[in-house]
Image (spheres, rainbow, N blue to C red):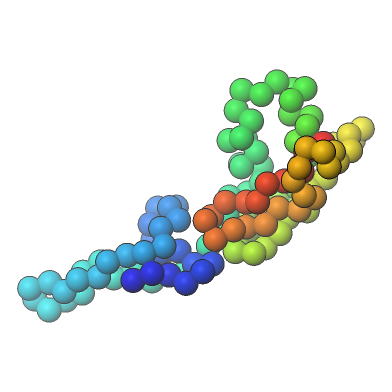
Length: 112
């Protein structure tokens, strides 16, 4: 069984699995049945920590922070801001918002 877009299999220890298999036991009971739940994405801060592991303080300045850093659900957006003294650099790609995607990740954010 496959979950619809924006949903993942529930109770799968934080994975973003989209499918599960259901079978019938010899006793006539369903085995492997799950439900689907809305996709959630990690907070921007947690995503940033993973992306910048080992970065120097100077490199950290190139990354914005989220105004309201929270765990988001499918299609929700977070607005990003550069640290004081820095500006958004459109030549480096990304956007001033990040959105929770179907694969349980956030879209690429801007760099400062």
